[in-house]
Image (cartoon, rainbow, N blue to C red; front, side, top):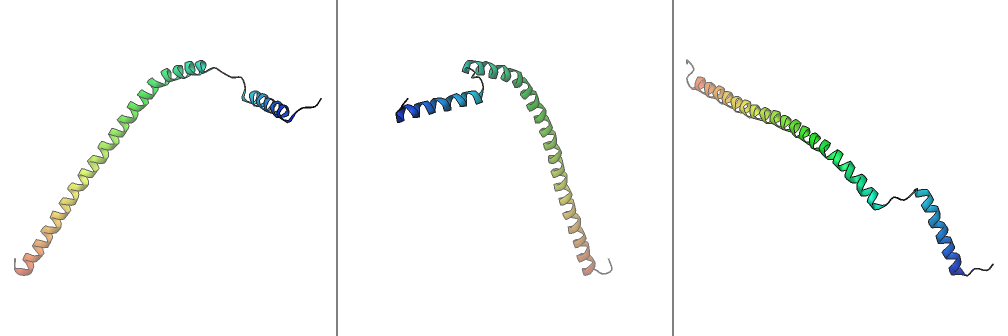
Length: 100
């Protein structure tokens, strides 16, 4: 049997498509995917909301902790600056008035 070049090419393409179809497995319609996706989303959505709320609460607690530490650090820094200024003032007074 003699095949023309075009016919041979078509047969090779069909054979390649068949081998791809068998390696991919059975095909599933788009509706099936949509039903599966919707079912998965319905189940996961409430879990995501719970996880998101829990994560938000954890992050707010951490943020509050860091805010308090920063406020304390600012207070401590100002207190240290006041104490250093007081020591410097006392040293200057003692230098000016040695007997005091």
